[in-house]
Image 1 (cartoon, rainbow, N blue to C red):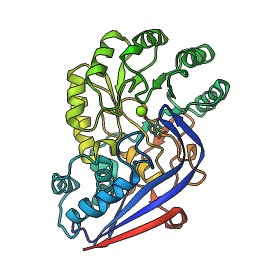
Image 2 (image 1 turned 135 degrees about the vertical axis):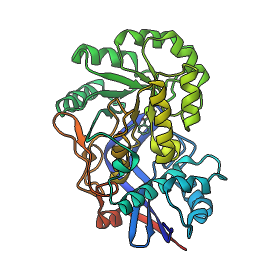
Image 3 (image 1 turned 45 degrees about the horizontal axis):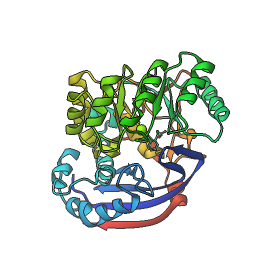
Length: 369
Ligand code: OSB
Ligand code: MG
């Protein structure tokens, strides 16, 4: 497929409610959509970088720079057979995984549409429906969080993840256990702690969490291996895993027993599949994380979750969890028993709605071969 035309749009979308983590509060999404054309075929991708470098070092603006000045020039006008080929064209560019991932996502959607297959099938996915969990932010009041948990359990979500930070941790977990008993429950620290907090994690170990996500530094693997050694609760790494090689190192060092895979964080669906295969070989469960995506990113997450190693519920909640109106048709919905039915139409299987996308677009740039 010859890459004829690439459009990069920057969107601003207001979320229904603020989402608070240990690194800050977000209520307005600043993100990119990329649309790639090859002949009469089109593919879409969505970036997960944020407005500020608080989750990873990348931002929406660094993605714009990388796309415009390096990644798009390397791809435009080229003839490629498969999305994997694009990664060879970008091999000169270090890091910047989220910028690579937005193009990779559009290329995979385009490739699947050309093949007349769903993205899930094209990736080698095997599931017809995927199991869904939900991630709940820090709240000003504990009671509010407990009410939100009750609502989400009622809606069928298969596990509850709560965000923790110093001062919002042990008592929160204790209150949830007291109110809801042995529900599937996990905690995500987003790197808010250090090894000096070992006693806190040992205390948390008594609450039968399914896992503790990214307790230590966002770049660390070594200290997580030390912490995991002291805990029966599995550690799940998110921020620290940027590549298939990181996953292998973390698993072999005993730094984690579970991996949260975010397509954007590892540089796209091509490296995601490789990372997934490493986890499968090692018998380490993987699940799909979320980055408060709008519909196009969410659709890519649904597709990747159909791979056989995704054996735990992901953070791929329904569109309505964050959006008044999503940018795809149909929206992503979760059944009363906690599953998303994987679409079988070509590509991502949901149609981007141009009118809605236009309404949220703040700028556009067009690149032609
Ligand atoms: O650490 O998994 C995370 C959201 C933004 C940035 C980081 C994270 C999250 C979530 C929410 O936990 C996942 C989602 O619902 O999209
Ligand atoms: Mg996380």
